[in-house]
Length: 199
Image 1: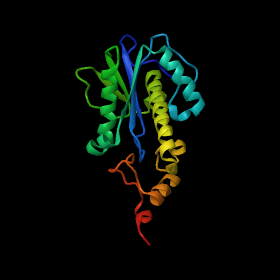
Image 2: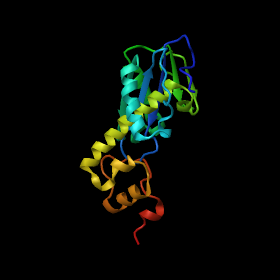
Image 3: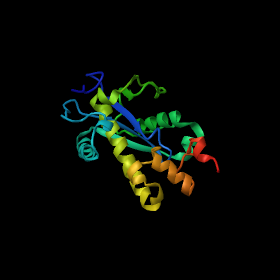
Image 4: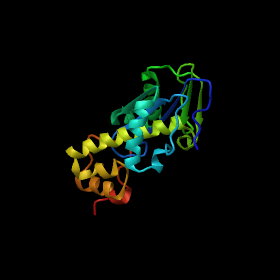
């Protein structure tokens, strides 16, 4: 059973991101503040859940959260400042966009930069330990998947509806056959060296 939050008596937000390892599309961050009486039997790390369950949970989280915010950080910013800084920037923008200022921030992972003077704690695999981080992981994942599925309509050759921009074998083959486009991250290695060689 996941814990609600780290500090029982503070207004605490959980934050997470999705899409750090992708070759295309934004990195998407989310921040969520849940009410103190929130609980749900199958809310956990979004990667452990089916798409159907994630979408059900998205509705519940949006309905029951005190507040939430989701932000896309696009490819040009990722290429400019690198993926780690872009992920942290996305989390900062989410926290800034919350309608209630949190008194404490819980972050999934092990890297963060201070957000003003608000105290924070990084929690490795936090989306499997705390409900508010799990909720943020669900929102980040579902919003990003939705974005990539919409892009698929314009660029079906990459099958982003299926791979969501991750470096699957099929996605890399499509890049080799069709080239990259404006939604690919130029600072990422899109093709392994052996695929990139002209024979």
